[in-house]
Amino acid sequence: AQKVTQAQTEISVVEKEDVTLDCVYETRDTTYYLFWYKQPPSGELVFLIRRNSFDEQNEISGRYSWNFQKSTSSFNFTITASQVVDSAVYFCALSLGSGSARQLTFGSGTQLTVLP
Amino acid sequence: KAGVTQTPRYLIKTRGQQVTLSCSPISGHRSVSWYQQTPGQGLQFLFEYFSETQRNKGNFPGRFSGRQFSNSRSEMNVSTLELGDSALYLCASSAWDSDGHGYTFGSGTRLTVV
Image (cartoon, rainbow over all chains, first blue to last red; front, side, top):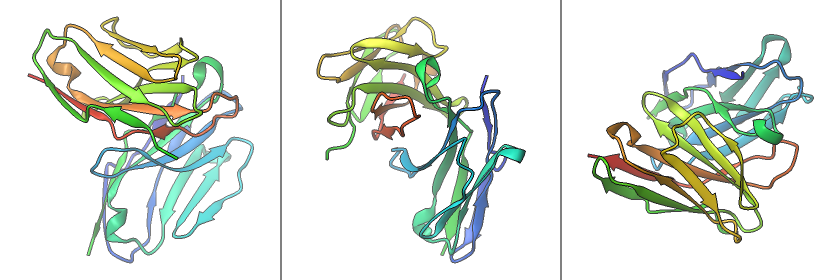
């Protein structure tokens, strides 16, 4: 069975600080996909990134960056120069990507609050 | 391109009643998944439909059911509602392929059972 752990329940930072959200996953499969989603108060899950298990290249998108390390089964997410609009719940998720295992297994989420 | 549309946005039902929620996926997406989000259990997978067939099911009682129509729109039904069914129900659409394509979620239906 798959498992995703987000040990940080809540994080509070002051605007312009950098913040890293941790994600650790468990799976016995060699092919899998990792995701990050953002959930603002409106409730919709907003897709941020997908990474497959064969691509460990780190990615940067604007103020967002992701560090994928298979050796530690981690897929951490960093927001640089945080802004108040970044306040939301962030979810890390895992999918085996095919057949009956396509569904997303989510972590418990990290509530990020960015204070002005 | 229109996003995933879920209706209604809010719903209040009485224990013992049944409820039907609707989801219209992104045009061209043939897969629809449903998730339940509660403070205690977090986000949990309910089921997935593709081409009007249920392809995958999570660990929920038979009171939870769904279906998909030929236009890919999906409905989920919960019968004999219990207080614990109060949750945000999220629908996600995706293209059915084998590379773990990303899912696009709707804004959800917030169900309150009283």
